[in-house]
Length: 164
Length: 263
Image (cartoon, rainbow over all chains, first blue to last red; front, side, top):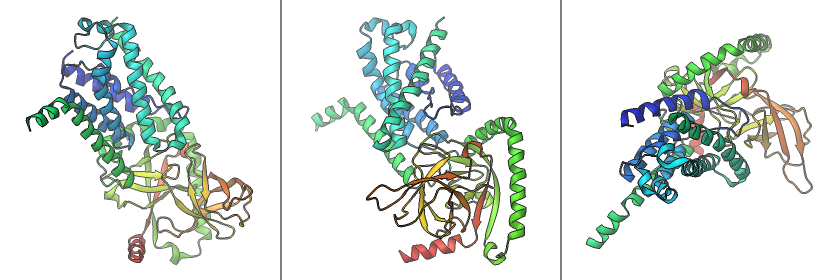
């Protein structure tokens, strides 16, 4: 997948995020941030620092839509920092890695581990920074759990559909 | 020197990571303290336009309820017109009608975006109300759009008083339910009854005195407490908020300058 396709996917996912998922205000604890799909599924071919800069850019764009300047930025930078270490840790068979992250490249088990860990970290950071106080911690955990499950389901579902 | 360079190169990714995170946290801090630019918020014209399209589409599904609300508002305004006595007092304040293009009600830091900005004379710090009561305070001003900090945001502090006896309290929000806010700083000796009406105090130039806020839902006073714990049912229904008015006080700038002069 070349970078034009990556950008196209990012724009479509971002539209879905702000036009559909940001409008869901169902149970108060449900704010899935599906835009990180693009960051998670980016091939790991770029220099690590470039990866983090792209993460920061995607975070700032999301922050503008949420009036939360810095919150998504911080979470996405961390996400992109952890990503290569995590994938190296999860995927034992380095030959299968092939610098692509997809269902076909790394298999279901590794993909689920990878997505679950990174989505939960990202959501936990975003909701904690947005709450900015320990008194709301139980609600932040609930929010992370509910929104995280939806985001995880969508990212895994996307991978299954994309490789049918 | 060479060793130092080697170490720097070896950990360059980590250093980039730390630098970026520090920048992000500075952004969070600056944004929480005082957002100056409308560009990096929903007051940004492109973002607000997109939100306007969404709320335009969603607006069709609540036309009946909107009509009813507008009719009710008209009636209230006529009543006010008939009852308006202190003409001199009201001349200083004018209202600019605005449409809500984006709003959240289920987060700790809720915001709403309205379709009036600097071009319409909106200034940071002005009050926002609707026909029912207080909505919030202008936080970030863009060219054509502004972001409002509503009372249902955990950052908000609004000076209010009891309609019955001028007793002052501070309206805050605990982040739980958009229908209820809390009134702090009401001393224990004060008698609080469910059903008491709370209005703006007029102590800050943001709102003129007497704009309705809500009624006391319940109040609690534990043994040994020096302040009441009061829950206020807000008059404004944030879940259905579509139209608001920006309160423009001609004397606001002068009042604020006077207050700063005192510090």
